[in-house]
Image 1 (cartoon, one colour):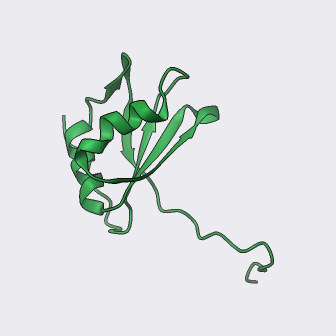
Image 2 (cartoon, one colour):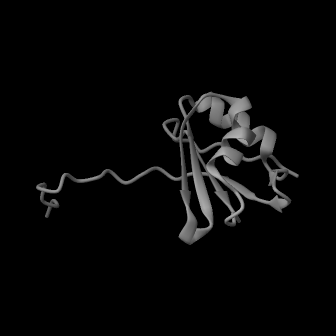
Length: 99
């Protein structure tokens, strides 16, 4: 199986994990990913059965992607691992959209 190709945008340090269910906790994710680098944040989106893990460095995210691609299993669930997409910039609540 080919490994997960890192995106060209070097600022991306987030991995997407899909296929979660209620049994998988934030601690389960941290336990599976911490050995690859320092984790900045873990965000579980229960409604979409996915999570996002952001590393403090791009190298940590690349290490995790290389090691866990096509073989991430937590609590018997085979999970999908992909690179996250860049976040759209957030607007301040008082800021108007450009015309």
